[in-house]
Image (cartoon, rainbow, N blue to C red; front, side):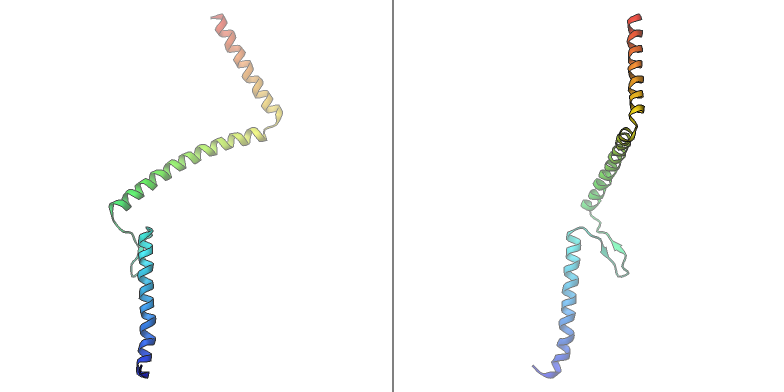
Length: 111
């Protein structure tokens, strides 16, 4: 190897490694569904039927999960109200329900 080839090799080897790394990075991103980037750094999503269908399914699942989360929040609010409610207030609510039940039974017996 001649001494004049050393600067060329010093540039060629790192350049080749950078190119191989860029290709490997792009391949991994495509394989796992991450968006690619154009020369300005803006995301470029691959357009294919599978990707569009996947976005639709994820959007639908997201809406279902949001609805379920709202339901769980309502239930949690009721449980918190019951747990933090004083015994007197809870007892009075139970008594009021019993009185309503007895009134409904009496009305049914009269009719």
